[in-house]
Image (cartoon, rainbow, N blue to C red):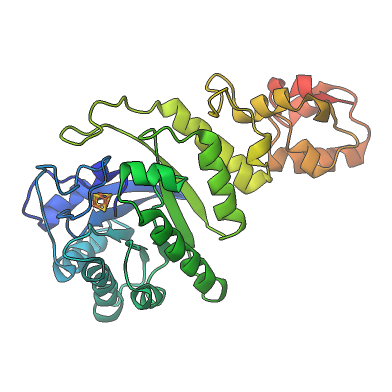
Length: 344
Ligand code: SF4
């Protein structure tokens, strides 16, 4: 199951160690780390209209065995070209076969090759819950791509029952993770722009996933039309829309903003011409100006230009005496855009 399947496209059908270098991408997790991100095969029986690997396209098909992938990966790892592996699979033969191949790769790496580094494995729709359970023993991170925020959208772009199937597995992961905490948690990914799903719908679902299922991260992948697929004539999503979604996601995840309080246009999408926090402030004017001498930390972080660190620095600064002008805040490198939203 690969949204953003373009990242898995291969230029050569024969997969050898050298061709794996095409799949190394810089993952951001604190610092940037090179991760090998690959499907064991792109021979898929799925029919997702946004994906280059769907069974009806005539893209170049490839496969690599769990044994070869493990061997090649370890060679790249020993040369310090990669720091981790993210392994996924298409729906080849059936879901259990494809999921077993992922599991086999992890077992070879952990048990035979004694690899101790980062492993991220994808959970496939329809795969056996016992296989998912087993993956907890070997993976640092498990993910399920929900792809869309509603059943209606996923049905339009994919196969009908997939949404409930994915949600069931995501809830199962979340339950097991309560006691057997994965080091790098559970994540999901959405495709944005392949259907009419709105930013409000994406963010409402993300809020649910963070709050109720305790996901570590939700990723937003901008839809790019792929020739030969049913959606080839759609326009690619604007990178600014993805940037705004990540800004809003950050505010929801780290700052406790509610998606319902964010500012959207008439269609339910975030405003492209404004930073998300600034748009929030304009929509919720009754919360401002925030008095920097009296406000709580939670109120301070709602001010455009004031993040968690700056809010803590303001709390410290006001112990030294009343803040009477912006000059003192400027010394903390608080940007001028905060000015209209504060008072003293
Ligand atoms: S299941 Fe769908 S998204 Fe995954 S590889 Fe197959 S066609 Fe692509």
